[in-house]
Length: 130
Image (cartoon, rainbow, N blue to C red):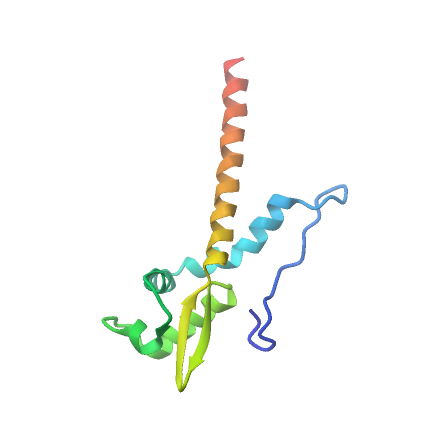
């Protein structure tokens, strides 16, 4: 999400040689911000905590952690920019919860990559056995 507009930011569609859109490349391009956000140990731990239920406040997310509230807030903003979490206000308290659909998109992207690798390895196996 863009911090300024509050709207989801989607990368431009990539077009393969010959003008046809590369579906696999587009899916990976869309999932890249999710994987980048999850590549940080602290953010991954925050997502794991949010998976346990929610919504969670900053104070609750920092309990038992050496990470400051300010640092957790910055990490949550990175996760929000990637579409993995969203925040709501309840009175004066800002609550954070997981966006499971975005994780589902990333999971489907990994499954597609895995399927393509399996197909490529099968083609290689057949080639070697011929």
